[in-house]
Length: 261
Image 1: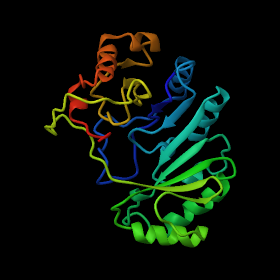
Image 2 (image 1 turned 45 degrees about the vertical axis):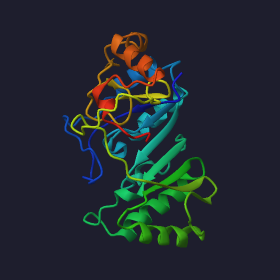
Image 3 (image 1 turned 135 degrees about the vertical axis):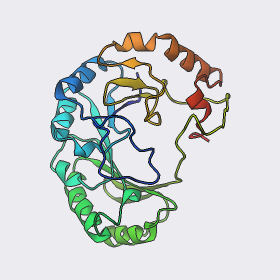
């Protein structure tokens, strides 16, 4: 079983963050029948679905229906969001964890005070049933102001990873560089958790090895057309998996990725 499977229910986003790969595919929203296919075909392969790849999942008009459907099928749901539309799910009790990327704040959209106020009021409700993880890049432009607001809200001094309140945490990370065929790294040695720990499903059903393949370069199959067993037993999947076990990166995209480093 996979520890988690990333599911991109939409590749549409309300922002154009400078650190993001940016969607270059046709904008799409997954249909409810398509999502039900995914729920059925992943049975026995994972218990955790992560609404995260490219796109802002809370833009999906049926976000709450998707969450509830997954829960009814005994999946645990994790969501990664930029926080702008978090009030759309504030009353949903079926979410295991929400990761809120505070470094996504765009001062051209709304004031920082209004942005955080909406998040804080929604989190006050959500945290009764859901783990909340505030995330922020170490070198974010508004990091100091955001931290000051968090300290005032939760009456806690923040120094690195901190538990702010029951079920509410903050975590800091260095910004990473997306893998790209044009990076020129060509590192053929290295292991990865992809295919062992997780894989991803793009909004059109394309199965990819990880959440960093937002372009769908390494196509392992299509969940709407293939069964998981056929995808896993495909030659491309097996060559990648066996390569990682031998500390070898088979795919060019992997050779140009240094995320684990």
